[in-house]
Amino acid sequence: MAEQVALVIGGLAGGLLLLLLLIWVSCCLWKRLCAMFTYEELPGTTAASSTQGDKLCPPYAARTQTSRPPGVPFVVPPSFQDRDWVPLNSGEWAQVPRDPCPAPELLPHTSSSNLGMVGTINPELYKFLEDTSETDFPEGCLGRLWFSLEYQQEAERLLVGLIKARRLQGPSETCSPLVKLHLLPDERRFLQSKTKRKTSNPQFDEHFIFQVSSKSITQRVLRFSVYHVDRQRKHQLLGQVFFPLKNETLAGDCRRLIWRDLEAESLEPPSEFGDLQFCLGYNDCLRRLTVVVLRAKGLQLQEDTSFVSVCVKVSLMNHNKFVKCKKTLAVLGSANPVYSETFSFKADPAELDTASLSLTVLQGAEGEKSHALGRVVVGPYMYARGKQLEHWNEMLSKPKELVKRWHALCRTTEP
Image 1 (cartoon, one colour):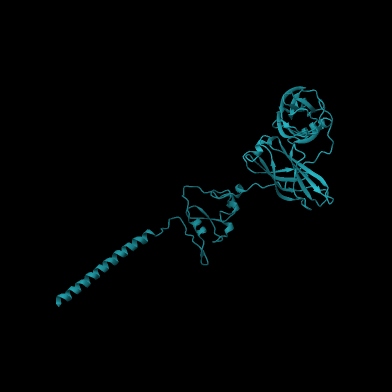
Image 2: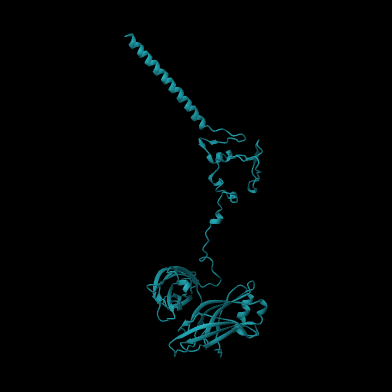
C-alpha cells in the first residue's frame, strides 16, 4: 500500500515539473516572436500618426514618416514655396500640418500644383482630340455632309451610307432637304433619300448600294446633290459634293467615314469649248506652286470613236518655255469629268513674274493620237488678262491658301 502511494506522488511531481518546463519554453518563444514584430523608431524621424475622431489618416502618416539621407540636398519646389515650413533637428524641412485628413481633391495624385512632379499623371497628355467638324465652319459655307463608303471586292458592290447634314442654307427658315446620289458619268440613274421636313440639320442614316465592277470603280465619281423641297414639291438645289473614287479610298474593304462641304452649282452657261475648275496656291516658305485640278464641264467630245478618255495636262512655263509637265488620270467617256488631283511645282518667288501655267484638256481615242479640246493660261500681266490674271493675282495676295475658280477654255492648236 505504501509503495502505491509513493508511485502516485512521484508521478504527480514529474507531471508538474514537465508542465512547468513547457510553460517556460512557451514564454521564451513568445518573447522572441514579439521581438521580431516590434518596430524600432529610427533616430531623426518623427511619428506622425494622427487621428481625427476615431478615423486614422494613412496617406498623411505615410508621407510624414519617410526620411531622406542627410547627404542629399533638398530644394522646395516653386509650387510649394508659399506654404508654411518648420525646421527639424536633422536639418530638414517639413510642412506644418494644417488638416490631418486632407480632402481627396487635395491629395498629391489629384492636385493641379503637382503636375510637374515625378510619379504624378499629367491629364493634359491624355486628352482626346476634339472633333471640330460640327463646329468649325468656314465663312460662306453652304452646309456640310457626312457619309460613309465601303467597296466589297468580291461582290463588286459599293456601299454608301448617307449619315447627316449640318447648317444647310435653305431659301427660308423652314428647310426640307433630300439628297440624290449619282455615280458619274452615269447622269440618268440615281438613288434618292427620304425628305426630312423643316430642319437645316437633317439626320438621314440611310444606306445605298451601287453595283459597279472593280475595273471601272476608280473611274467613277460619287455625286451628292442636296435639294430643298418646297410645298409644291419643286426641287431647289442647295449644293453638291463630288467625291472621286480612288484606289486609296477603297483599299482594305473597310468602311470609311467622310465629310465634305457643299459646293454651289455654277449658274453661268458652259462656254463654247467647255469650262475647267481648278485651284491655285503658292507657299513662299517651301517655294511651291500648287495646282489642284477639280473638274471640267461642257466639253465638246468627239463621240465617233468607241473609246474616249479625257485628261488634263498642267504645264509650268517660264518665258514661254516649258519647264515641267504633269497629267491627270484619264476619265472615260464623260463630258463632265471630275479629277480632284493635286500637282506641285518648284518655283522661286523671283520667277513668278515671268512664269505661267497652261492647263490643256486632252481627248484620247483608242489607236489615235490625242488632241486638245481647249486650253487656259493663268499668269502675270505678261501672259494673261481678265479672270485668268485675277486668279493669279489673288493667289499671290493670299499665300498658303488655295484659290478656286472656273475658267472658260479657248481653242488651241496644241496637240
